[in-house]
Image (tube, rainbow, N blue to C red; front, side, top):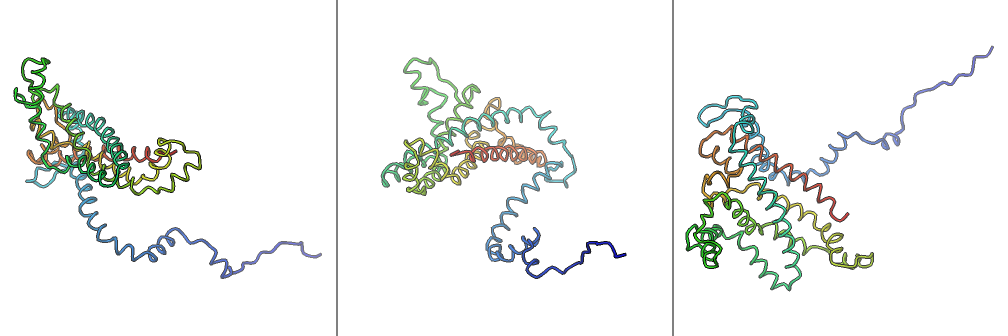
Length: 323
């Protein structure tokens, strides 16, 4: 009898070519890329060190301190979620501040963002010298320091105030209105002032972005069927400006959520019936006056989460531009 035919397998050492063709692991790939680009990491190391020390570390410490009781005199004591429970369940002033901040953000954020782009788009069509002059005119309020105090003269609570004088002469009112002492008007006026101040960094970023749009894209678009300025704006200009649009969105979100200085100087601190109280003014109250740093850190953490969530939403919306 002959043995049955059996398939015998023998192990063969992989050839050198097979080993070379095998894809490296993910860790090996990261290490090889790090070795290849090591000079880039050396160049970016100073910035990353400063960014970690002055941005990442303070945020992490703030979140940690928000879970403690810390009065700047004693060592922090662990409090768990007590600060957040107090913030949302026991602090009625914070809820008023949160409502005012959301109103500020919802109104001033989108309006100022759109206004920055529209004015930049219109000014970009002017001749260079005229464009430079108009840019200065629109940008001037945001770099003029306390120039918003002219609104105190306009809305002065006596008959010498510009608005009161005009309304009394025209017969709309018979006696002066205390604009910044009446909760009915305070928030509205501060929103107007904030919008007036909003043509700042985002406005300049949009003008710079419009200047960098490749003009040949408009010729290519005309060949592909784009027939009017609105189509050029949606399919060419806006997609070419995504970095500037994202930068402007971050700046406007930060400005709309961080309203404090204008409200404090025009309406007082605290304002009448907390009509102009915001999350940032509430943070200033507990952080720099009462020195309840644990509670102040919980307010800052809530504000940070609100800003971060808004930025993520804006990023998703901007990805759809031009689609």
